[in-house]
Length: 426
Image (cartoon, rainbow, N blue to C red; front, side, top):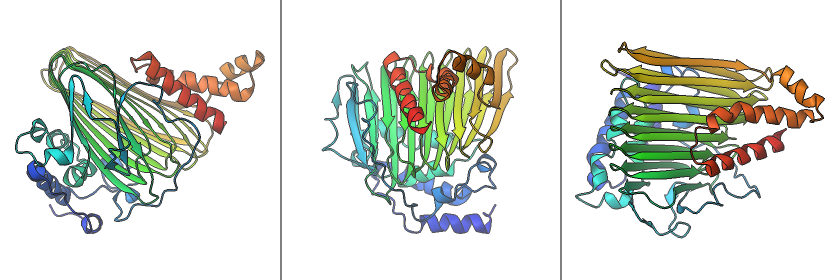
């Protein structure tokens, strides 16, 4: 079927000045991804999973201007011992990064693996992204697979002594960055991956994660701090038997953020938890779109998303649990909630369950409301100022999402960042 003229014109305009990297062993995957972009077109409000979020600035030929955000607060995770991998406006920065050497892990840049005939990542590049295009098309992810020029391939074979930290720095007010990362966690291996930083004026990132039987991956991400940035991120995760995947994202500031998570549990007894907390003020639009597929027996999934919105901010949650035939003993849980601190903000939610097995426990819920006036009165009656009382109740509201972080020190870092944001914006 031919694309509508408006969508075709927008897609051609976006692609007109884009150049595919000299891709080596990833050439076939990139060319396939480009063909898919041309076939499906870039997203618009007429697409079912984009009806709540305007994609204009994410698909325009030029990246919108984004003023640099300068703050004297320390960068997140600075207090942790970690292997730092730094990208500046989407380009790897060796002078700011540590040596890419850590026990139990091998790390290569995407551009380096393109020069090799044999590399483990060759069998994964674009594969999970392609699989994640069904049943919902994700054209910005395909665009990334076709054109991303940088990123890293992380192969985890043991249990490294410290986290791997991906740091994204924004230095140009017109930067338009694409990064593509690949992570393979072998059987019995375990790793923590941290991400933080604003990255670019416009940022398109894709991570493909393959977790083998018995592998464990903890992912903690903080998006910020620029007020004017725009970002579309995609994570495609495949889990084997007895494997564990836990991902948490904190988002503050930004004009537009769209985070997509596509998770497939393919091995029995796998566990996948995806959580997020966001706080937004004013011209802020935040979209979490999550699709979890249960395709094995006795698997557990949790989706926990909390949004705090005020001064006209908008939050979106689209989450689905698909239980395939034969995926008995599934335990699927999904909750999305918003705290609206004024009457101008809005929360748009689309929770979904699709179940083809009869021995399952699945639930979903979505609520939106204001600060509990009774609880606020209780705190004020005990001498706590209104501003501080509101902040305490806000942190309590976000706690269920933050509690999904297993590492207590990392959870405390997230809470401290939330406290700082609330104190500055109260």
